[in-house]
Image (tube, rainbow, N blue to C red; front, side, top):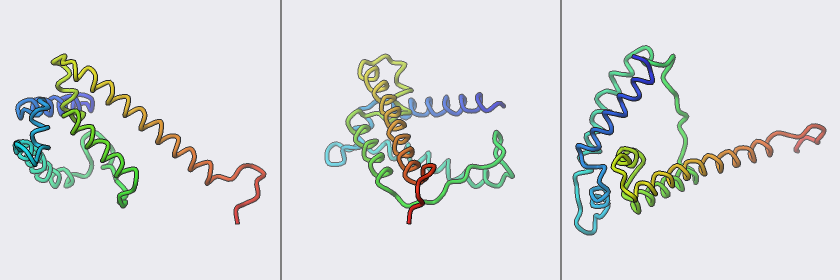
Length: 156
């Protein structure tokens, strides 16, 4: 199976799961976030089910010599939470709480043509773009500060 077909089928299964679990309805998500009011616990079971599937399959997948569609498994450097991670997490949470959607359910629900989604999804992509622009500016600034200019005296 080609990687693009595998990604499409994975996304399709994810979208069907979101729909069956009722997570494409922002009222369900907002009900889960309303712990002080009429709390809707069903999203906890959706998340728990996803964690259980991941926990069961991760060990089996990592017993393979390599992934199906890549030369090696990705490696991630262990790092401590920083200001960018905390700010991004806070923005994600605020957006999720205000809109009732996170990216997966928003894209899945876009097919309904609901007006709030026609506003939310473009705003979400604008946020993705803005984050990339700000990250690129930050990394260029760090690169300039670290790399001495030609003819400049070395830093003490």
